[in-house]
Length: 221
Image 1 (cartoon, rainbow, N blue to C red):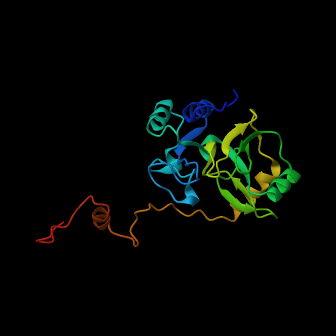
Image 2: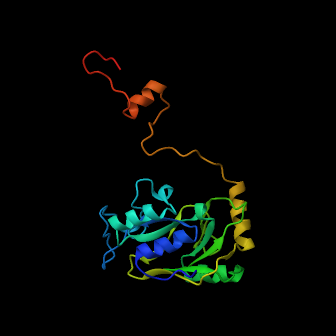
Image 3: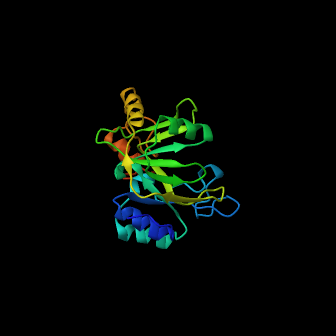
């Protein structure tokens, strides 16, 4: 089914019906500044997640999606790439677009924005990683993880929308690049933002995270 530009909620539900995991993102004012309740800086305007865990909150659940857009009806629509089985080739300059076209871009869904991003189906063995500033142009992002704005408005004022309908298979050159990067990447365990700066005992961890407290008078936990 083609994705038709409509209200953000309708588009989010269409994307979820395709089996893609969506999340609400910041939106901007006419002057390009943040218009969402979080007051993001210019760097993140139009693309910062609105939910507590960001891309980890992305879902296909219609009830959850309807609740998000009831709270933020103007929110841009993002799609979590890895959980949706997608890879994006995001070209950030004319040189990057020419380079990617020269390597081969089969007709597929294209996310139109300030610059286009070409959306492909990930292979079963595609590494779920992001390869930023790739290629001779240093302006191609190969994204098999994270999220991408699929619908809404860029902070420049340009509309963000999808063109085409069918999603093509991932070009071989993208797969090769991601595998090459994946083979040299060491997986670093994710650390919570509020993690202590040192390794603590079980009791120390409970105190750090507020599950236990120290009595101010006698020092007992």
